Amino acid sequence: MITRTLIRQKVVQILYAYLLRENTNVEAAEKELTFSLNKAYELYLYLLLLMVAVKHYAEDRMALRRQRLQPTAEDINPNRRFVDNRFINQLEQNSELAERKKSLKLSWKDAEDVVRRLFENIERGDAYCEYMNAPDEPSYDDDRALWRKLYKQYIMDSDELDDLFEEQSLYWNDDKAVVDTFVLKTIRQFDPAMGAEQVLSPQFRDMEDAEFAQTLLRRALTNAATYRELIDEQSSNWTGERIAFMDTVIMVTALAEVTSFPSIPLGVTLNEYVEIAKFYSTPSSGSFINGILDAAAKKLKKNEK
Image 1 (cartoon, rainbow, N blue to C red):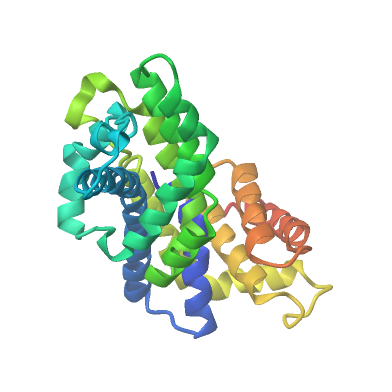
Image 2 (cartoon, rainbow, N blue to C red; image 1 turned 180 degrees about the vertical axis):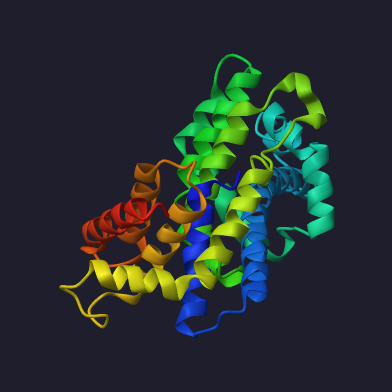
């Protein structure tokens, strides 16, 4: 689930904090990176559990309405399509999610008002109404498609959820856009034949990605001074003060990747860090960083480094 793009972003974030404080404690930085990557995966699980929490709220509300002093016919015999949705019930019963929920102590109980408002927004929407009132019984594909629609419309772009995640973790707001794509991918991949044993996205695609994260941070932090000298050589028309500090950090990380992972095409590396610059630095940083890194890479290649 954790892509190399997200790894690069997190290495840049941590390197920025350490270089700003002139802290070169590699072991502490690696622990912080591991914690940050673990939090990203925790957010993935937390968002899966959010969908289950919405279903639980809808079910609890039906139970309360049946207990009214004068329940209506609809209270007694409610439309159960939403709570009987086969995809969401399969997700609720997923053994891996249940195990992770228990071990990480993940719960939406402290955010019940958020869950309630989320369901109320869903209930008023067209997708929900069309699903609940369709003349034919929905298929499993229909059940799964509903939750993809609901997730895109109400969870991906929720200011209230963004505020909640910012309160709960400093890491989550930057992670959410990437994590959202994997939640949607997980919904799409669910197979009714797998039942409770449906496999969720793993934290890392393979051990190489986990090693990539640690190696990239370690090389960037330990060789930062050398890379900064190289950057200064290629930016003779700029003074150190005029180069945004974040730009320097991004280029240091990129040079660590260029010199440590020769199997990654140079163009891929440069493009990745130009995109990071567009998001984290100034509007002109992308083209500037691309030019400096290209010149630095040519010198490294000439010197067989």
